[in-house]
Image (cartoon, rainbow, N blue to C red):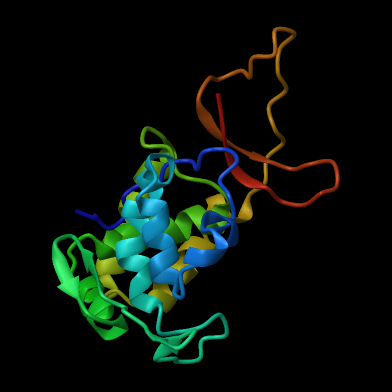
Length: 195
């Protein structure tokens, strides 16, 4: 069963492109058929069994966001499942998301992650900040604009710190801590987990 916010494993090296995944005589006609090939392969299924049941719910929309009913002359199947709730199309996926009690916390965590450039560590001041943001999001009646404002005005979003220098043995002082980094070219990298 696919759960909202489930971590996606790191893909294995040397995964062939979708076009290379099928021989000429059995080339799938739809993205769903291509994804089914990936799920059938053990080294691909770890990720695809998590992503595909949700992602294929948006298959009626092409890369530019235009609606389409067919792909390569084949009717698109946009059905899927989320946390045990089956849906048949993007509208059903939207309803499954709307009714999912994990959505607010998942949304807060993902927006924070993308906003600051890295995942929050569970045992850090960032966890306390995420708890605060979750509470504010609920108090603001789950308004996305207010959530984005809270994250954008936070220290984690606006403060850039110098990276820690490794000691002669190559170890970064402080162990596994979130650190913000400024590379030599001055571009912000955001939070990075140091091991």
